[in-house]
Image 1 (cartoon, rainbow over the protein chains, first blue to last red):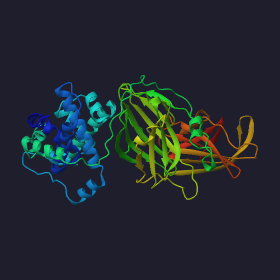
Image 2 (cartoon, rainbow over the protein chains, first blue to last red):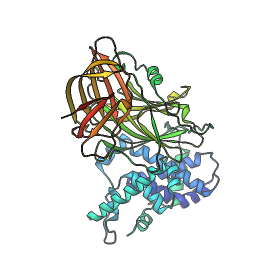
Image 3 (spheres, rainbow over the protein chains, first blue to last red):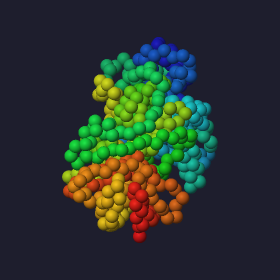
Image 4 (cartoon, rainbow over the protein chains, first blue to last red):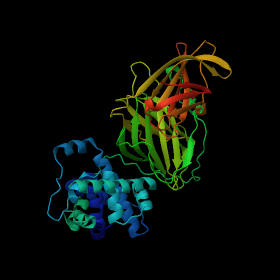
Length: 153
Length: 324
């Protein structure tokens, strides 16, 4: 893969990978590190992809794994105690940024993949390697929690 | 602001060109030694779920020695689950978890755990890769290194309630019962590990165990009912000393006259009545007995957490005991 091709993939999917990573890390710098590591894996991979959708799904899967590894590390939890990204408030925000920051990562990821990326429950099940009923449960509980957080604003 | 606008605003702070340059630089660095497993894909027959006992599996785990002399006469219940519905709200009791371990052939997601002093209730699901046959693997729970329960063997859910979904995922409520020994009188503060291994065990080292710390408050609801009453079992008269009920389990103790050292008991041998509850509580799959100092201890687990004060009577092998 040459630089132009890599650049094209990052242009197409970089923000998607970033948002997936951000669902877990809630931190800009860490999310960008995960974007970087995800595309390094793509660069080094000899996997043959059947379609653009296949590449995108693969990138998301890799990003999720990297993000979960990072969030689960002792280093990350210690660092989080010292600093975290504080969501900025603005008049047009309606408290959504703060509510999303409160939302547990496991709900944030499925909400992003379903409502923004348009993945079906079955597709999310395959991406996150959790069962379809579990995806549905997370969507339902994520929605409820968001409603609760927003209602408290 | 709506969700779309919220996500639209989330973008990398660097341009795609700058990110590409970063990626190229990192890719050209010397590789770091990071443990990344390559998924192994095995083409095998479609998953077949069977129902059966695990006495043989328990024996193979060395559970029949010393104080782990627990004889499992367990059966698994396999039900079709259309919608994920936890019988325990882990945000209220125990701890919600989201531990996903991807083993390549299958992934395991630990969803939640709750416990009383001696019984842990673990909800997890297993997701197969396409075509993977669960009979390839074997799963065991350990508590601080000691094997305490065979959870999965030969495609059989060994303990607890289980269900399969349309995509061949399996939900398991595994009830993990501990036999106290030495200073080990509670599971609070201990760490459970769930270990899977391939049947041929050649890839054992690939299967990193999943650690599940019991670092939450366990239920302390325990009710002891002193009885010292006669009880008929298998055509013989015995004395039942007491019944101990906790949130997740029951133990009843039979005074042994030395002629028997264990009692075979099936979950159908015990039933309960509850006050003010329309739930059908029953014994879960694990019923076993141990013998110590002239007493046969028979243990079982509930299929739901119970409030012990709600139990009004217990029937054991046709003998009904009214509880005050």
